[in-house]
Amino acid sequence: MADQQNHRILPPPHVLASMHPKSTDVPCIIVIFGGAGDLSHRKLLPALYNLMVEGELPSKFAIVGFSMESLDDDAYRKFARTGIEEFSRQKLSEEVWNKFAPLLHFVSGSFDRPGDYAKLDERLKQLDGEVGSAGNHIFYFAIPPAFIDQCSSGLHSAGMVNAPDSKDGFTRVVVEKPIGRDLASAIEINSQLARHFDEGQIFRIDHYLGKETVENLMVLRFANAIFEPIWSARFIDHVQITVAEQEGVGTRAAYYDHAGALRDMVQSHILQVLCMIASEPPRSTGADAVRDSKLDVIRSLRPYDRADVDRLVVRGQYVEGLCGGEKAKSYRDEDHVRPDSNIETFVALKCYIENWRWAGVPFYLRTGKRLPRRASEIAIYFKQVPRILYNARPAPALPPNYLSIRIQPDEGLALNIISKVPGQTLRLNPVDVDFHYKTASPEAYETLLSDVIVGDQTLFMRRDTVEAAWRFVQVILDEWEHSDAAPFPYAAGSWGPTESALLIARDGRAWRTL
Ligand code: BG6
Image (cartoon, rainbow, N blue to C red; front, top):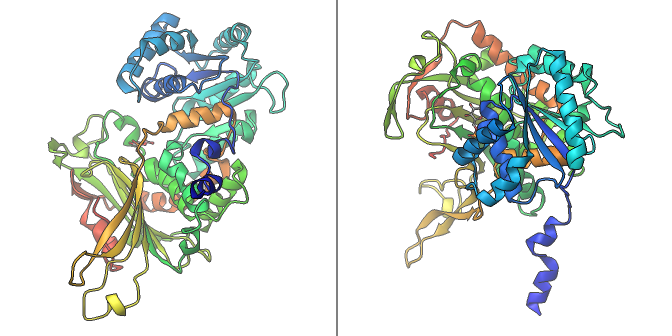
């Protein structure tokens, strides 16, 4: 009887899932601009392969790589295969591959030649006829931002962009970060896109939003009764968000040495995560309702003035050190990095969200390359219990409770509480109530590609949010640009410069040890 009741109250997971049915069987063709590039090889093609393994690809579907390389379909299939062999979450199986390979096609063309768009258009029409994709086309811009305008105009001039309400099939465009390198260039890119596409057709990727734990933040907050009542300045002392990478700049120095950690990680990923933590409950789970709530958070961030930047933002750059047991060279000695570069590979900052929920609660954010380990985590620190009973003086104060949400690796969450050590003497100890995801989560790109196919924009950045995020970081960029100071050095393999520890220590707090 008790069992039956439980079942009525708590349907098994598949029943919950079907409450929001999301059929992925939407006929379409995805065209990857820069189809023979690194992003396709490492992320997009493996993600599409994994969707096939999971049975999540539409039954009427094709993938077309479009770029300058002179490949034919066979060569493109080989390229995809090596990417899948090396980078796919799930091992390549010949059975799945034999079904996946025929979906892959390649059109060789240059983004600046109108004739090449006509060639692409012809191929798409032919494929529409062959696979039954109903004229539904997704154009994925896996290209540097400088080409976005050219490619959008090229598609438009070739008559390949259907109006949002067209009966001839949908047109969607996927844009990768970085959306610009400052507020002005972000506005320019967004305006270029807006000339040819409706906002409802534009999917701006921030792959952190596709990570399972980040997506789960909303569920954690709004599908449980216990968190929301304590999710405010009344009970929360402060919040820490860390996105730590062990890797250095790797092969991406040409881009990174003109971007740096603030543009690369804070303006996008970290502010997006902050929004998921701090937003008000959206009026529905609809894309715009969720994105409206997030926008409110970014707009409520207390803007820095020049003096704040010095006091509240720390930038660092790694120098030689021991990282992951291996000797790592200085950032300035990395290939393609300017030897006198002042680009930051580490940022720590403190910010405030000025609304009723968060008034007075500091948010400490940090990210960096060549830190001791890869670990991304959100830690919500609750207020101290009163200094009475178990927390009475003169005994040392009990450590505050915290909720640690692990984004990666080892995705899950832990609620750290104080508990009695079993035995006759009264001894108290912090313990973790720990939850680990047991199943392998899909990669962010799998989730996001699937959402583009379905047409769900919830996890994609809207124009206003991107620009609001740039507006917030712009003052920091400006201040750094006009300053003679260099980033603080930190040894590769350490947790960043001492100034980062001081930033939080000044408030009587400490960064979590991860
Ligand atoms: C990218 C940044 O957006 O995110 C990279 O450009 C960074 O510099 C990467 O390494 C981190 O992503 P993940 O998923 O490995 O944490």
